[in-house]
Image 1 (spheres, protein in one colour):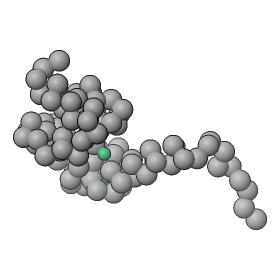
Image 2 (spheres, protein in one colour):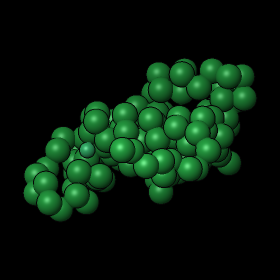
Image 3 (spheres, rainbow, N blue to C red):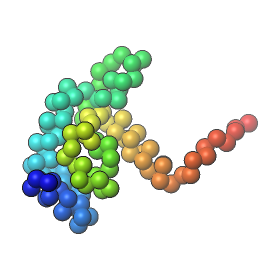
Image 4 (cartoon, rainbow, N blue to C red):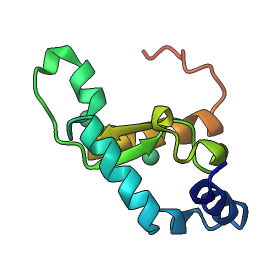
Length: 108
Ligand SMILES: [Zn+2]
Ligand SMILES: [Zn+2]
């Protein structure tokens, strides 16, 4: 583990993951990921039917920072998303936690 990652892991261990986003090293990482992804939302891009490029505004941790601190700075765990897609990702995570998996109720 390099020093940057040690620092990030320490913050998370202390329940201060919000501070991670204020670190210079995170800003640098975030900028690098946005650049890698051409500043485009990678989810919108995959929705081919939309045929439009949406500007990415967020860099999202695919595996949540809180639960996978060791992947905090891992390029493969980071993805550029637009605001909407980012919200969607987090909603889904929330829902998965709250609801059991039987959403097959029929509506009449
Ligand atoms: Zn998007
Ligand atoms: Zn996120």
